[in-house]
Amino acid sequence: MQFEVQENVITAFGVIETGDGVKFASLFSQLEQSQTDILLKLHTEGGSVFDGNMIYNALINSKANVTIHIIGIAASMGAIISLAVDEVYMAENSYLMIHAPSSYSSGQAQDFENQAKLLRLIEADFIKKLQQKTGKTEEYVKQWLIGDTWFNAQQALNEGLIKGIISPEFDFDACNPKQLSVKEVFNHYKPSNNFNFSDMDLREQLISRFKLISNTSNTNILMKVEEALYLREELKKLLELDKKVSDDEILEAVKKLLEAEQTTQEEQETEARYLTTQAIRSGGITQAQEQHVLNLFKNDFKGTKNFLNSLPKRNPFSISDLIKSKVVSEQSQEKPKSDWNLDDYRKNAPKELEQNQQLYQRLIKAKYNNKN
Image (cartoon, rainbow, N blue to C red; front, side, top):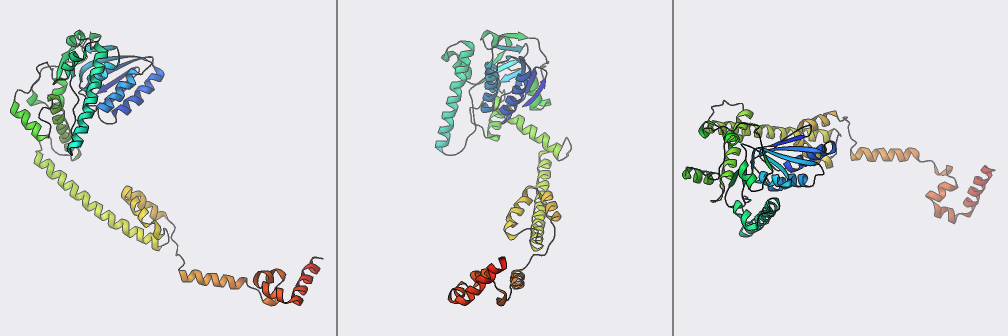
């Protein structure tokens, strides 16, 4: 979802993705600090229920005077978000769509049962919010969750879903879907209560292609097609391919890119091991640090390489060198026994001092006479 803030107006356009709830809550919180009246302009096909709930919660708990303008489409979770405040207005040519929550799951029977329980909880929450907004009975609003239920501005006003109708901000012209991308169709298409694919064979092919459940809504199918086309366009930009490139050519270009990255990765792993070994030999790092440094290479090859190259080079002592050094040091610090004083005997030969009273008396006398 794309967010933009200008003065006291925040626009929210596109699919509600994972993480959008946090983004919106952060932007909205900043806006609340400086504005007492906030306008949210909404145009969304729906998306993540959990992130949509975060947006809903930020709106319903706000101390500011919040108004929502639906200027295009408020579908699925977008419709639920619009229930958060009283001051909701739809553009004359905009549409609102309500349906039951859906998900995609895999696994064992228990996994599907758990998913079904979650969907029922979410559906119950939708029904409760719709009742609170419209004042209608549970049985009445439940009918809106069967399939895709579309409302134009006047229908939404009649049902109590909005407070009023405003002038259009955008033109939604009729279009030929075959000449446009799905995103453009979504931005131009005028939904109706009889929204259905005229070609049921096409619907079944799309359900099979995207591995959807058989009774999935048309909106979910469109969203999946849109995501696929968006990915195709992004790949063409990333790979710098011609606009008229075929799907096979895109796949071949992706394959070559992955092969090149694999080769580069193997070369970097070889170089990383070489540089790490050299650093150990030169004393820059220890053997115990080897695996840690190799892991650093995986996260930041260039930075780790520069780090190792910046380490001072030194020749570490071998064990034999350390032993020789210690022996020489100890020998250089020794003094002849004939020069020992009382403290030296107490430290190095206490038993001899205890058994030789004459020696003890001489050393005591020498120690204290010297002090006098």
